[in-house]
Length: 595
Image (tube, rainbow, N blue to C red; front, side):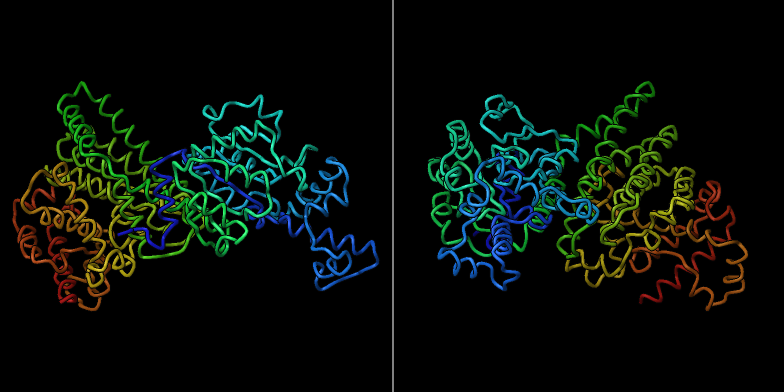
């Protein structure tokens, strides 16, 4: 069974991810087409138009047919360029006008790196690609690389190759096979493209033998020396993938057969490379930490917590984990652009959970075994992860909204750890900490920013699409949070037999705190005496507790004098017992609505 049948892009993404730096790119003129740089055929037709103008022809519906009638031969780019410019320097000047942007083109964003160039630069930045072969004369790929802070080794002539940094030592090696449009030594005609310098052939033999190949925007029809180099290479240690608009051309079938190329039919180079980059990012994000490394991490936290003299080591360890999650969940890895799909939503949620797990387990331990000296450290972590991921940007709303999911997971993990150790005062403080909203101008409590209905990533319909089993859930987000933090419970609460009870107690106390976002006067107006119409519209987020059988046991806990006394002493319910009674009325009303 082939799990990638009819999905060659995913197969390629997997191959690149598991073999970083092993695949070389072979890029043709189709890559730069969307930037407004014409292909060789488009330049040919334009040159025919200009020749026709000199011969008194003002316009033609079909310049190819006109040329055929006039000169009794099919138009050929190489022949035409050689006819209109007899020297390499003259041919370079002609190309310059097609590649160098005018002032108007620059203002319109034309002849600048495209989405494909930027996606390739990102693949290079993160070590997935190191070798780029291109038949293009333009400098768009180099410009895209430099925007990412990468200074490539660029070779566009035999002289440059002799003095270039060795392939193995280069972070990124760009081999411009036909030259650079600013250099008169470009290879442009059939005669010039018939045979490469010996140094070119030697290097190409090595690349085609030792590297996998990804061709895009290249037809494989016209470049004689390049075709010969591919056919000459005996080795196929790694696969060849050929991205084409439609199937591979008949004229290039011998190349495809020789390399046993896998054809990927695409609509555009931009879409292909952006999609490829996204799939590689998904694979990167879903690589879970090994159990051994997690155990080492959590055991270190426990050891440092047990000895006050290790507080600096504890802080350094948590800070290191924080930096890792800030980097791994950045917009560079989780682009907000792209289209919605249930599969992509599930992939992103799973990736965020996997990346957050190590730090969430650490914060759970801080809550469970800490003594309040760790509180500021834990809160700084939650705030840093939250504020980093609310930075404004454009993109799909759903992807923007769930960027703060890691901070929700950390908030739950630390809070449930606090609850396990009955540190009610610290838990109450956590619920009432202030975070800036996405405008950066207003502060709200954590229970109004990271908790259920008030978290911007909350959307019942979207979370019901996380998987088919969630489709009819009353509280899909609460359920998912319970399930994923339950997988981490050995560190957050220990091996308790009823983790769901502790989880729902945490959400119940968060709901109680949220309840107090309303003024005392508003609460009394709705509940004393009881006004069912006002109770109905009294906004309080509830999770699983509103429908789960554990609700009655938790309600009894809120009626227990000792438990209530502990809550009131910690500041819950404005330290007023009747507030808890009013809250219970709202909880019971909410439960009746579900049933």
